Amino acid sequence: MVKNIDAYNYDDIRPVNDDEVSAAIEELIACDGLETALRYVLPSLDWEALKAKLRLCKTKEQFKSSISYNLVLTVIKLTTTSLTISGGERISKNACTFISNHRDIVMDAALLNVLLYDIGHSMTQIAIGDNLLIYPWIRPVFRLNNSFFVKRNLSGREKLNASRKLSSYIHHTITETKESVWIAQREGRAKDSNDTTHTGVLKMLTMGGESDTLENLISLNIVPIAISYEYDPCDYLKAQEMQLKRDHPDFEKSRRDDLLNMEMGILKNKGRIHFTIANPINQKLKTIADQKNKNELITDVAAMIDEEIYKHYRFYPCNYAAFDLLNGGKRFAANYTENELIEFQEYVKKQLDKTEIPNKDEPFLRRKMLEMYSNPLKNHLKATGMI
Image (cartoon, rainbow, N blue to C red; front, side, top):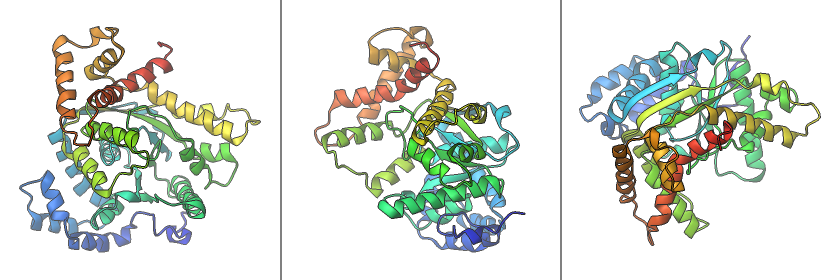
């Protein structure tokens, strides 16, 4: 029997329950700014018709399949050349914890759920940082989309307690409500695309189980996912942030910065996108020696996830061109044409022209841009023994 989720006191982080959907939709409709935000994507939006359609949704599944799915499809048509998935046969019928590299604040999980739905799998619950709750309408949108919140900007005892509750909620979702979840391999995006699984994420995941560290991880049925965007609309913003942090070590992004990154990630060109469902790691976890201490074990598990992600990237001409431009050679010249090389160089220049910061360091910014597009290939080469 599935226990009542409210008994766990997850109310401050969980999605809505189905019996709360109607109230959440009324809350959403009443929020200032939602209509304006939607018109960025749908300029000809019939707001009254949408409100009527929203009110027809009585469950989260109806909201996701009739509202969110179609909205994400619209974004896909406007901002991508193609969206594909492979490795679906590796997903078991049991609920699992998808852990992926993190390219875009909103779109990573949104695209994954569309792809899973299209190949006949249930959409996942989604881990979302509460720092993204910038406007009142964002919270009910995320909760209706089956998102749960990761509390940020905590310290000391508050952070520890929040991590325990989050971990407990994820274990509850996997083992009792039998829903899959998605969580990024690290807090925040890897600005330079050097994707590494943070051990802190894995340590958090072990807190909520009922056994030892290894068994708690095994119970989560972890499945890595490699996400490959041809173009990252936020690349120049990420490069800009890296210079600001270099020049001002205490620099912190503002809420306005988060909003701009969200807008660019949703609305601007991403080219081709591919998701690869990599190999579940449970079989490897079961081979880990019992005598390892917790830190060693967590480090090994992070390396397992990283290797699966690195081996399953998909690459585009821009990745190969960036690698050669950064390293001053032509190792991958067969993987792009002269025109594609020129187009990529022009793309980098066009993106860097958008940066607006004091003491703009063009060589630094360009190098960071090239690293963003070449690091996945570099890590792939290392993981496959080619470098």
